[in-house]
Length: 352
Length: 265
Ligand SMILES: Nc1ncnc2c1ncn2[C@@H]1O[C@H](COP(=O)(O)OP(=O)(O)OP(=O)(O)O)[C@@H](O)[C@H]1O
Ligand SMILES: [Mg+2]
Image 1 (tube, rainbow over the protein chains, first blue to last red):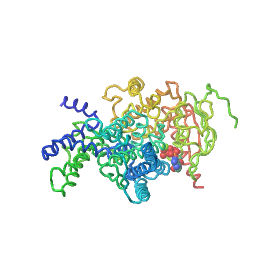
Image 2: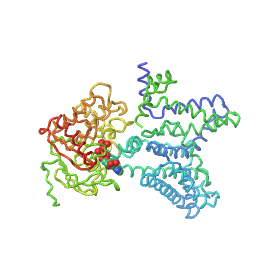
Image 3: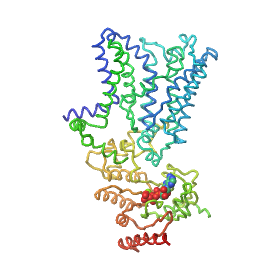
Image 4: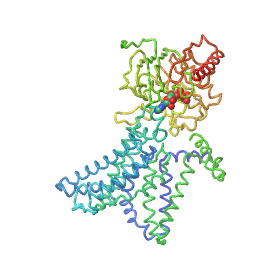
């Protein structure tokens, strides 16, 4: 038991390990149930192509949720930034149109995020309301400007920026998989090693404590929403380049991205966040649908299975969250009397 | 009011002169004049809503007063440029009842939040922070055993231990003035004793302190002087040597009654 405990302690320090194991189990199950598809590398390469856009947005969302806020407006940013890229692409000289398009897209994301931040931090609108409204508004603007039509990025295949962001120069590995991993590493350092990230955690924990301890709560919130706006724009850039076409509704992965964050172990309560949990969580969520379809289970079952897996993982997260083995066992022993199983439930209610 | 020359040998750690504070129509503080000596422990006493925490927040740069002046170690404070960071820089540290520590955060982060040791890109020197945090816990606060380390989360600590962390942090950052705003609420007698002990350490270290509590015996034990705040105004200032605990108790009781009589008439 002591050895188990020690091992658990070491392992629990590896961020996202739990959900990485879930991913492994998922692939094992899929290999067994759909061997024709899942024993070939092709399907995995396709995941490395299709998962990164939602993964990128979910990484930023992890920071926002760690700060005790939510951002429902990133789908609109993914759309708007794709449009900005497409517009820059067709308007300017091909020699630098891609770069201009990307700068425009990031700027659009930053503006939307900054306005979100102002609404939340300066005016005090709860972020769920502010960003819900923002999502409708900016998505509407995007459809309006695009005339409701898709736009093709002409000649994107030969473009060097396209190659750099979503090409496959080594072993056929799509570069967006690499860039999203790089972003995850970068954001891990921001959250866990930079004072901005520490401010984010303390604000999510208790904004009053953060304030009296000298954290600039308002500025941090505004920066955070701006940052997430830019990250969502990056997601839109990658997506639009990869497909080669801008679709107005291309960012419709709000719920999968949120599911990735929660499945990865970040709690809606704020105060702590798991970047690599979200990283692996995104692959779990992104592989589930394709995986379940490939097992030739009737199509009607797909969502049921997906929902079941998500629920199982978040239940597991809630049970193991802050706990060591002893208290975990305790919880299952007293499962019918939650206050005995989990004394923290009691003390939490008291402090509310 | 003339601006005295900056004088670091000023006998006061702190001087509030004619401070007023309104929140909209609510008048929270009226004409507050309050001094705290260099090595003086001042007890701030008053009913709920008397304005004690409002005074603390002005001193610590959370918000400015509506009017009035503040001198820290003889230097006049420019409220346009005064915030929590500059209060820290002026050697003012605060311990609140429940707002001092991030519950879900590890202790070493709690010691340095708001003034991390970073490189010039803002990345935290975790190793150094942990080493210093450990030193404070062992040497300043005297945490031993109990399996509490700098990697423990605040939620694992008892109430008294939490206040110990907050006070230890204040002492480490070489505060000249430590403000404790109801640091013993909801603590057991044993935990209160720990906090009182920390306050004695502040006095021994030659620092100043403002101690706010509704428990008069606690205030009496640790403080050199008692300042009574009544609906935003200073009602009395009594040195400890001029009054016994019993007399102070009676005085406060009479004071409360007197107030009621005044209200009736
Ligand atoms: N941010 C604020 N906005 C409006 N009114 C406020 C604000 N902060 C304090 N007040 C008011 O100022 C008055 C003094 O409040 P304060 O918190 O300073 O009292 P206190 O003496 O600390 O009381 P307690 O013993 O209950 O802590 C109260 O009437 C309170 O309602
Ligand atoms: Mg108060």
